[in-house]
Image (tube, rainbow, N blue to C red; front, side, top):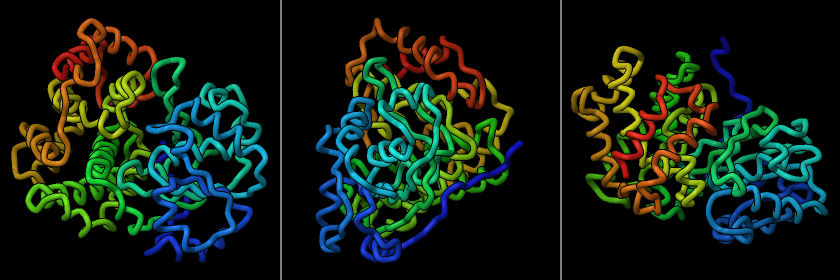
Length: 371
């Protein structure tokens, strides 16, 4: 059994300018980012890089259509490194573009082409949620299939992952909250994964301790408190990424993908809808496994009992982000069973990583309670 792996070299800088100087960014680098990040943090450095702004290819999360349009536009650019500076969308796109001979990203997701790394990849996250800078996973909406797919392979892992707290400053609170909740889910799902080890659980626990304490302070003092803990939160996201990069995630993500794919709900927000409900089902179906230890550890932080801990976490998260009934996103009552069946049919990679087995009836029940 493999206990632990980290493919990327970690670096930390106070500012983007320090990073650009240390990594000697220049004409042989393709920087994939957003204009709202470029203007305040990169423009003044007057770099000779090739810059590409992701939002010019569409809003929201990455899709196969978006990726292929960008891929077509960068064909004539000569570059040796891809520098991804952004949130999950920018990072997931950039990971695919290191592959040799990529013409259509769906070929990579379907593994119809050999996965060979041709470019170096440097990832600089600007949110505190995905942890994607240290994982070998890229996720995209596959529009023709009305769902999301993930590609997990070491060829798309970053060569270097860069932590720069400065880049969190411009993140609006709603996006901060959704991304940070996503990081919490990564840490907790990874902890109960069948692939978890003492090494990965150490990173899970370090991540959720930071995140929950910051969330409690935000609930007490208001959204502006987040600026006091930018460095801690981006590090917690990184810890959670290391944990789930080794142990994987499970049913929370599996249930959220059809919601994101059909109704274009942002990834962190979609995961939030299912998080505590899935773990309540875990507690009911298999109350004697490692969820006992998890519940006790979380209960100490939340000052409650293990039996009530996920209800208490739900109450805390409601101070950061509203949880909506699924019907407000567009889901119809007659679609619920179909959604559950779709999860069983398309998300076996994630469901195989569950804490305990969930049937189609279990999944339908979760959807209906949240409907």
